[in-house]
Every structure is written in structure tokens, then in C-alpha cells.
Length: 363
Image (cartoon, rainbow, N blue to C red; front, top):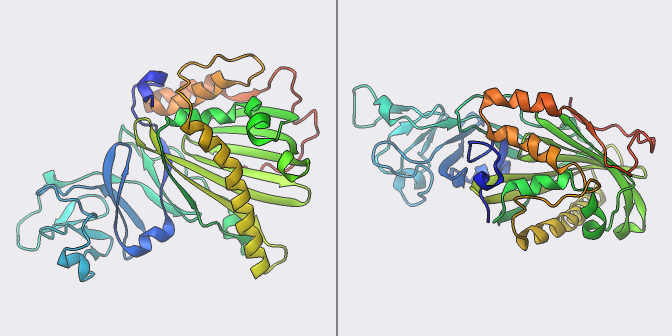
């Protein structure tokens, strides 16, 4: 396992951006104790329906706000009030901004020194996404979304929870530039390929025959919105789907991952057959992604890649990723030098192959 400093990404330990921290449905069972970015966190849904993410420990005596299921205030369903949460130990109440706004046995002002950090968080595409920034800044850009998620003809994913993996997310992001693993790893050698940098978005366009499906041509446009959330539009024949792959740092050098597929019904109404096809489609996509997962489990860190010119633009990808580990004011200088399209010597481009599918990019 390697850590961020070994990749020389920047001064920060964890990247800045939007990250999945739970599946939306998980909050239906009440507050959750979660751990990401090397810190313990309390995640819950307020009575308004909005998710809230706070640092975990009450400033009073250090009690975890969300880890108890035996305290009577929890068992009686009295822990959540509005969008606030009460500590299970003494009942101190924290609002969604992380400030104590009520102490049940105290009539005076609540101590400001008991405040804890609150994180921007949204509920979108069946995911709870949180904005993390070591500098404590507000989001630079909106959380990623797909307009198809709101279309009743598309079958929404239920996430595959892939668990934790001892690998730095840099190794995951390297896949975006890695043209040469597509054949040996996935049985889908690409016939055209390019990368593009657009500020906080990193794009891969590629196409080639799929060995697992009898050589059917697959065309994909895949993009990261920030460092933690990948979306991919995949087209073969008359069929299209969207895939989500999310990775979130748990510790420096350890991630947690999720996966899902958004599949269109055959008609205007979703049938049982459509649901079965969607489940099979997601399982097939997960099988393909699992080959990467297995390789990541059994490789040493690639702190320096012995890259050939025809391997893909790894240096561009790593430079793009580094912006999220630098001070906010430095990110623009990174992307101003990188913004543009990158090709691999000897490999056709989408334009040369008349690749004209709608990217699906929300920009």
C-alpha cells in the first residue's frame, strides 16, 4: 500500500471533490457511523428528507453521534429532531451546520466551542455524495448527475457495494489513460482512443470489439467529474446504458468502491422482463470491472510508470488528478496547461473512425 505523498500529488493527504459515502436507501434505517478521509463521521437523513454529514464526535465528552443503537433515545426514535441529531449519551443536539443548538438540562447559551464540522452533501442518482476539501471550502462544481435518472423509461440502479481495497485511488484513475490494458484484461482491444481534459473533468473515448459478446463493437465515452465519481455511456448496436463506478478514500492508501448500471426499458413502461435484463446487464458490467479489481488487489504500487509512448497519456492523467491535492488557488494553473485532447501514437482517433455517438456529457 502506498500513500499520497509517495505519488507526489501535492500537499494534501486526500483529494478535493464529490464522493459517494453511502447508497441513499441505507439512510432509511437511521443514522450511520461511517469512516472516510481518515476520520469518523456521522451520516443521517433529517426529517426534511435531506442528508446530513458531520464529524462523528460530540464536543461534550467525545461520544460518537451515530454509533449507538442501544441508548434509549435511539431505541425510542427520539434522536433525530428536524434536521438535527441528539448525542445518545447526554442528549446534546447538533444541527445540520454542526452547531449545538440545545442542551436538555441547560438554559444558557450553547458553547460555540462544541461545534463540529459539517460537510456539503446531496442525495442524487441513488447515492449520498459528500463534498470533501481539506481546506474546508465550499464546492467548486455541482455533483455529477444524469438526466436519464429522472426518466421513467430508465431502470435505476441498486448499487453493488464492492467493499474496501488497499490501493491508492491514483491507481484507479490510471485506467482512464491506459489504452493497453483493454485487450489483455477485458478482451476488448480498442480500435480508436483519446483522452480529453476539461478543467475538473477527465474524459476517455474509445471503441473496439468485445470478446465476451462475440466481437460486437462497443463504443464508450467515460468521464470523471472530479477525482471520485466515474460515469460512462456505453453503446453497442441499438443499445445504450450508463455505468457508475465510485471510489472514496477511507484512509490514505485505502478506498471503498461502488458500482451500478442505468439501463433503458424496451418500451415506455418498465416490465418484469426489463428489470431482469437490467439486473443481468449490471452483473455483466460488474464482471468486467471485477477484473480490474482483482488486478489492483495483487499489484505493487506504480509510484513511477515505466511508460512507452504508445501506452497512453499517463502523465497527463496524473497531472490532471494532482489538481485535487493542491491548494484551491493552484488548480486552475494545472488545468490551464492541460486542457485539450490527447491521442496515442499509431492509434486512430474518434474523428478518424467517424465516432459520432452523443457523449452524454452534462456539459
